[in-house]
Image (cartoon, rainbow, N blue to C red; front, side, top):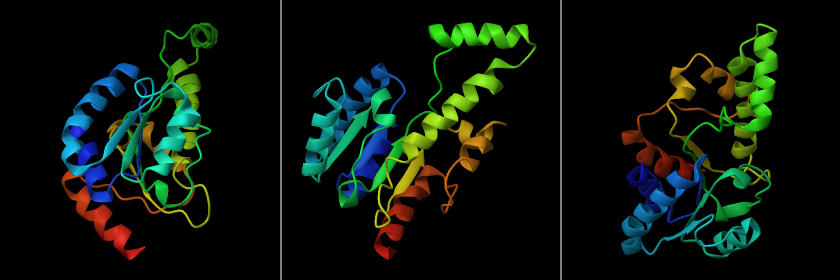
Length: 192
């Protein structure tokens, strides 16, 4: 995955926001990306590594074009990077809340008592809202453009995946194997 993210960052000279659902995955990926991207002078910023401040990291990202930003939970909403500072958004995994989250545990029990499916009634709707919020990080103004790459195959392979796609505003959606993504990105960005 780090190599794929690096390929996106290299093709766009940075300007990539990568959203994670796990701090440990972010940390491992940060280490690998720094190594891969150093020869290309692309800086890697990681939430909880380079700073714990979302606003500080966002400012650093916006002011340094050859940069990619790796974020977790708080970066799925409230991050505003309009204009050319952000050209691609990578969603590593669909943003499901862990099932052992205390509030969700109580809601899950209540749904089970009522013979409902907690995953479809609670987990999926919550994840869709967060997914839409994450998607919204890319297009902040009418002049903004960019690509969203979703690495989580569940968005196309699971029965609930279509619900995530249907929740998005009207956009051009392409299903591509990653081997074709970089050429597609470069071609699309030149046309726009």
